[in-house]
Length: 130
Image (tube, rainbow, N blue to C red; front, side, top):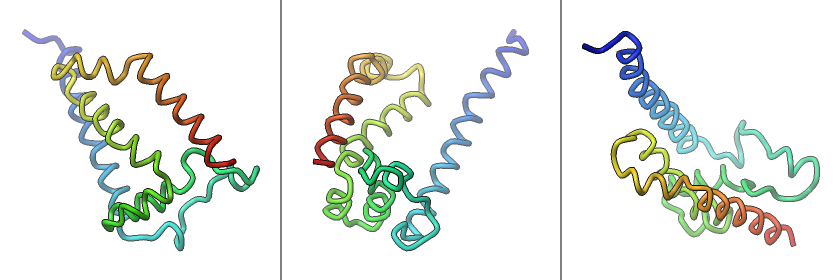
């Protein structure tokens, strides 16, 4: 028979997954409806303080462009977002299903994978500011 702790743990994961999914859907809806270039969206504090583009600069406008099928425009705004988005989505989905594709999850969240992403992000930041 399951203990109270096991029951709470078994209930908690689906609740967290559903909450995160709801937040993601709401964010997608906001970005689909409103254009970040013209709206109430926050500006990049790194860009405002230093004048340099951070790795995420252009991501809000790129997401809006993607949601409207403008892939070339999204790429021109922030190609790193288009490269890393499938990776991030895969990690989120695999984390939601901890007993499935364990080997793939282990590879995608390994120290080597995280280090490669961090290095690529640093190189991208340097390259886009040259």
